[in-house]
Amino acid sequence: MFRVSCNGGYAGRRTICSGVAFGRVEAPIVFKIEANGVANPLIVQFFIRDDPTKPSVYYVLNPMYDDRIDIEFFNVSSNGASACGDPVSVVSAQGVDLQLIFHVDRIQMAPNFRLTYEFFEVVQ
Image (cartoon, rainbow, N blue to C red; front, side):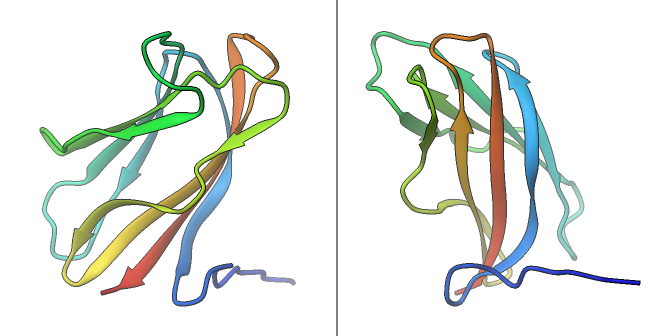
């Protein structure tokens, strides 16, 4: 009966996927991204990692290899939410940039967390 769609919270960005996933530290939450005209899907793996050599609430977008990109979010150990401040550009194809914005809820050093995410398309 009802259909609801979100057209994006940021000007010029169109939401293509959003949701909530629960994960474990050091184990990936995996996203599969397909695009028209691109033969192989892109696999995006999102990791929470505890690493004393990295700053708190710090993310790294690793280079693509074998149709896979890893996003590592480090040292999320406080109560409440931690997030990236601006959308992360994951990949571009055919003049469109795929971006991700996220926040993570983790209680102290619990082995589990909740990821809230939204993927956007931005025409370049």
